[in-house]
Figure 1 (cartoon, rainbow, N blue to C red):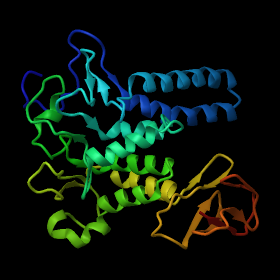
Figure 2 (spheres, rainbow, N blue to C red):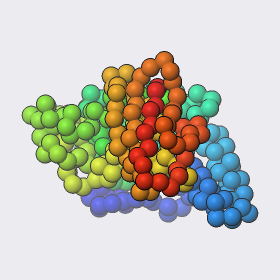
Figure 3 (tube, rainbow, N blue to C red):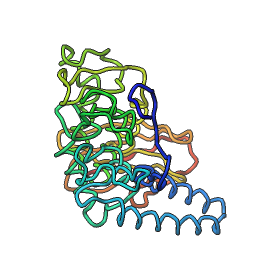
Length: 315
């Protein structure tokens, strides 16, 4: 669009190259390995082998073309220019690929993921959550469209989108940084924000779509409740990654990444008709143990039965 008043401008694609999303590449890497495991369980090994090669290729491609030295690029536009790069004047770093690429395992083994998370905190972190982009856009740019049509600090233009804060929370646990993950969780969760209701100005029992970023005059004020995937994503991030209890194909994974301030956490989890009583605590005797079930690594294997399964995890 040549003008900023047309809603939901998503791309230009008039002439030149095709735009490419590094964020979506990270999503591919986060999701496809799970699909590969399903194919292998179903005996479709030929198809799984093809997709493994695609995953390897995508991982190399993101590392070679989607990493900007200190963080992951957001995209390439349809002119072939970098989006979310240190080379840009505005919009140098975006939140989405920092979370999703690490969820896809990119850079976890060689330190690039931790560097990207450190950059996220340095450039996107605020006292009210992680903003979407920095620096905020100060003028309309037709190659970016709608994101540049909002005032700085609101919505996609450097507002704190609560939805994708959860991806960074998960990424922090993947890098085993529980204190950082829990800090981000508390900043966007309504119950933790109730004491600043005069700033937050939102129902204390529901997530907002966004919180005004630090480029806005009312930093910390929430907007658009009930209009977000934040609740479901935050539930996943806190239950399956901070607490670390998540179902697998043949058992229940218990792999917490809890902060120093939490201890003696008691969880009841129903899994395939059996109740799992799980205790998570800090201590020297680290490891996962189950009184009446087999444990392999960080997984309590499932067996049919009616008795509760008692699990103790020391981190």
